[in-house]
Image 1: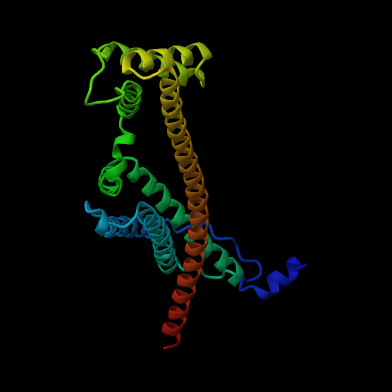
Image 2: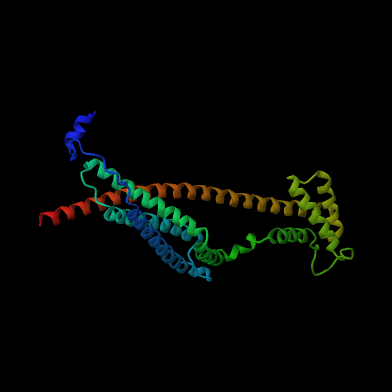
Length: 300
């Protein structure tokens, strides 16, 4: 345990000296580092958006997978965070006001604090910019990348996807037994398709189809398609299996997206934490380099 006496003996403070009334915070250096880090972040984000768009193509054989594009995007964001944090912290350390008559440990603490403050200011500045003007630039690149990379599955993301899927399954129930030889009682299936759609929507809302609805669906399919009751029941079972598989696939995709979002959030927070450490260490390095050059100038 270091005593107060030892600290005073090892310090450069003169006994009886009065503490300076000037603030230990060099806001000019902090803001300079923050603006430099924010500008560097913006530039590198635009470079990353350009590089990301080169990975995708409307031709599937020439386009990288969505997973590859996502990994590249996240890795680039981490790279941008660390580079900009290091540059901003170093600038804040080099430009801060020189402290005279301060112990070396206190100088080290102040330098790291200036780096951390520069990183915090840059982070808040970028958060504000990304929430307004810059968001349009980033969103445009993101939408273009998603549109190209996920063109095959884009219909699933539209508001009418559910209606299209329901209509498809309704028509699947009512396909005639022999399309080349229409059955006399098939007629117009629009009313039957609408009724089947209502049954499917109601069953989806309840989570399962009731036995009465299932029996009615079997008889309706048999009457409208000319199939026997056994064949109609087999068709209903097959289509319902397809519906269940589609529901499970959607749930699996949603779960995968949830896990990916949670992982990205946690890794993003870790990246910011490491960025803060890099900025603090870079500021300490910048401060030491400044003091070293000042010492050489005094000796020369």
